[in-house]
Image (cartoon, rainbow, N blue to C red; front, side, top):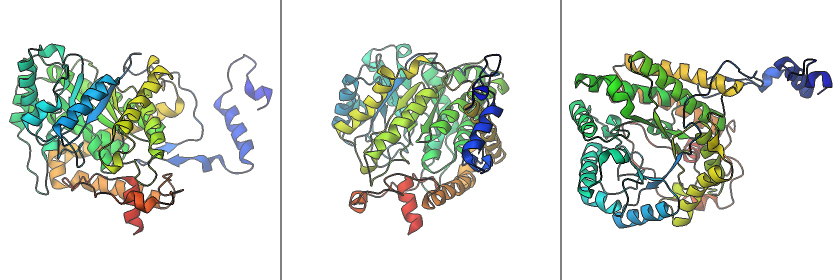
Length: 466
């Protein structure tokens, strides 16, 4: 760039016009518009953005380190317990316990009974360790088991850091689902609150939509709709939004698209602030948990998943997640061994200890591209939320198949883009290893749940090609 373009006479950085002239010169006659692209929600991605000075950092961890959470999903309770103790001794801050048959289990998981539950957590210090019980059809019973476990251990509930994972959507299983028992959920929520548990009692889980192929705006729209269901349910039980919202938590997926993953987490903060405002509730932080996408993991060239996991974990950290789970890079092949689990955990340790990502609050603040993405995504997510509300709310929309239908359209568009090479997946759609077919010969995916069938991008493209 010429000196005049590098710096203005006042010593200020060049404006976007100077950068645009430089880009046009590099394009050698091609229109700069050819560099524009669209996200899955049709949000334009411009080739150049001006830096934003009209925005403040979004509230997140405030420079604190996020919590490293490891999944516990072995069907053998003793092995699950060994997983838990090994991960905690290896530097994990917490555990994500997944039951068999739950959306997060995807074919694995601890048996959903009280004995197996207690065995998996044997020797785990419930004061020092952050514990997440992931949503499942057994969520209400699991909350009762955990409450009893804490009481029997003599631990004061207010000293624990527990996410109970009460999620009405997770109870909708089978092809003929029935509406959840709203009164039972409200009663359990109120009971845990009266026992002085201070973690997330109601979980707003967008991971299920992500794994089914939803777009980013659809994920957030479904999450907000779940929050609205909870607010109505609790209001009917006499619990006002100001008393309920501090006990909500959210779970989202992050994937190999760094910018969109960061923007999704930041958009969630904006949406949460708006929801509190409309509910006449004072601002309270939302506990946001991010998990690396299972859908992006490939079976055919498994080592490439390490890179996908790394960039996704970076996005979660930069986006301000309060806790992060990195799924083992071999998760597409079944239960991970100790080595894969350690690598998943150490990806986060590297980001903390060597990259120091956690010391900056909202590093995306002021970025023209990320601020624009965040705002556009928040607006579209609110529109999707309103669509679900017009259909009667999240439960009614799912039971009618309306939300699934829109997710299916987004999923088909994504699969077609992958199959056409517009969104390459290294090691699968391009540059596959010679033994790809042998490596891919593993068990089928778990059965569909209300039409929200978990997918893996690699497998979906193969089916489309066939």
